[in-house]
Image (cartoon, rainbow, N blue to C red):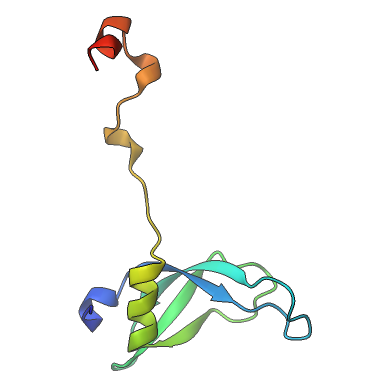
Amino acid sequence: MLSPDELIGQKVWLKVDRDPNYPHLEPYRVQAEITQPTSPPWFFARYQNPPQRLQSLGQWLTLYQAQYAVLTDPVIDYDFDDEEDFDEMSKDKFERL
């Protein structure tokens, strides 16, 4: 598994329950960054741009929950700068591919 130092700063997707009076509603899916304001095994997942209805700034995670979130539901930032744009390629370059 991942060490606590590897978890700090990771961005993950978390499911946050909506109003408990309406359990049939799907939970919010919120992006969060894992921080560690206290000593292990506790981590704090600070929400990034949460819906206005959420009253908290984040949620506390155990070491296992933080590891599970990083391994199963990480935020993937795509870098499209190094990909070739086939629309801007000349016809002869495109045919060679």
